[in-house]
Length: 162
Image 1 (cartoon, rainbow, N blue to C red):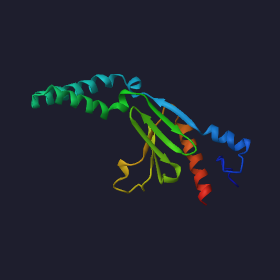
Image 2: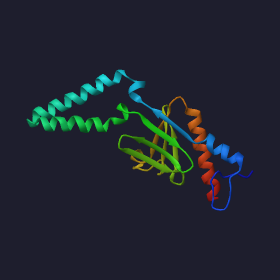
Image 3: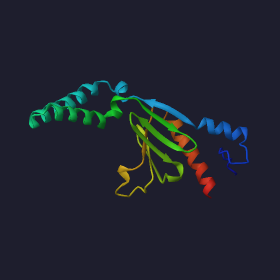
Image 4: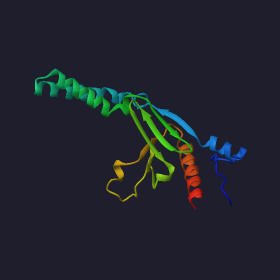
């Protein structure tokens, strides 16, 4: 069976069927963890403020306390702010307030599916660096669509390299 590539190469045109498939498997969605789990906000905010107060008192500096609050908020901004996820022809990506994480399909070596998302890793599963590399795509009631899109785009890349 021959796979039809949805890519527009110079001098060639995509067929209507492959363009339709490409559109079907090009996804964009948002996940806002604060809205999904609002009860956790009180605990997280409490810990962040408590840490800021403790650092401010320990260093006798309101500036250090404020810096602590800002840094902890930035470290947890994936919870506080909406996160945009994309899957398309070139790869998958995650974007939120000052952070952009992308991975091209050619670089994906291992896919791990979890209950709430899927991780696309550029490293083999047994690598010590694997937990720190890659892109994590969180599901938003679209688990099957996301997994189908990943399988489709990876098959397109495999078809090109074979």
